[in-house]
Image (cartoon, rainbow, N blue to C red):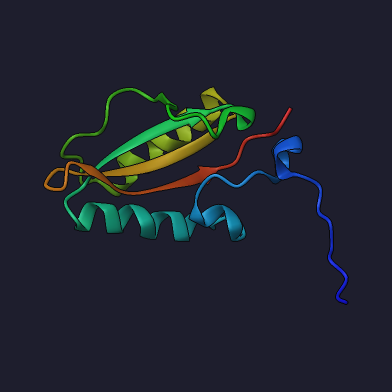
Length: 118
């Protein structure tokens, strides 16, 4: 008979909750985030910045940081908006989204700043 490890529920620990694929990996470096923004721009996707409290990361709707950056191709401008959102909401998760106009859906999304769980 094998022994089974019983893990405490991650739902009871907001800091252990996972909310997207990259959350299982170490935090991205600024260079890795830049590469992701470059990829979004190269695909012709519209970048957007969203944020939410860590305890609400499972909610369907995150707060929009301004409007999506329709047609923006300057990587530094996109990164500056993400940083401005993070500075305005330092305890929130900040997510970068790439909207695909043709598929009418998100092409990608990733948390680029992790908030502090309360």
